[in-house]
Amino acid sequence: MELFPLYLSVKLALVTTVLLMIMAAPVAYVLAYSEFFGKSFLEALVSLPLALPPTVLGFYLLIFMGPKGGFGRLWEKLTGSSLLFTFSAIVIASLVYSLPFAVQPMRAAFQKIDQKLLENAYVLGLSRTAAFFRVILPNTMGGLAASAILVFVHTMGEFGVLLMVGGSVPGQTKVASIAIYEAVEALNYHEAGIMCMTLIPISYAFLLLINWLNRRS
Image (tube, rainbow, N blue to C red):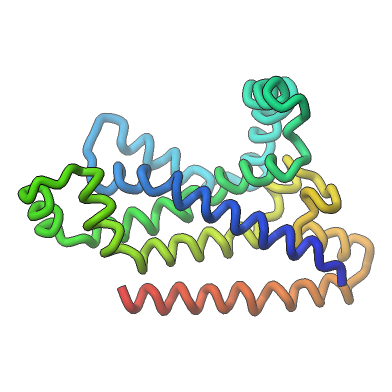
């Protein structure tokens, strides 16, 4: 069995998870504690990847990151190379596609915080930023961990979006899901089956961990 696609999937999932934990936290905080005009539009925008077929999302990302797209042109100007069909491209696609899987559990965890804790923190003179790091984060670690695991598992299983923007470049964008697809296309069911049986227990173990964390919280 070819192991590099599996390694690439794990690498992609780890990078996506770390970046999304940083990017999604302020979005989840705003949605949990703020009221403002257009909040419902932001909520819908964050959740949009859940409603769109992966190929639709992948198509627009393909245009956006292509040589004629704004971001693609900027990337090429800064780096001197094309963005499409690179590891960076599938990372960006994964960030967009997995965003709701990070934001929604975080938001739910933030909203479970006892408001009296926050009020006491503000009375004691803590700023919103200080309260976030000293009160909210320590009391939502279970929810944050569940969010991270959910993003990791979801990224491990991504296919359509990654195929649209990354293709199947060995060592760069050929992740496990794409390798399985190609093995099936080549009627190599043995290799496809082995890779599937490798992914199933990994995903199942992470889902069990999420359930355990949810029960604890």
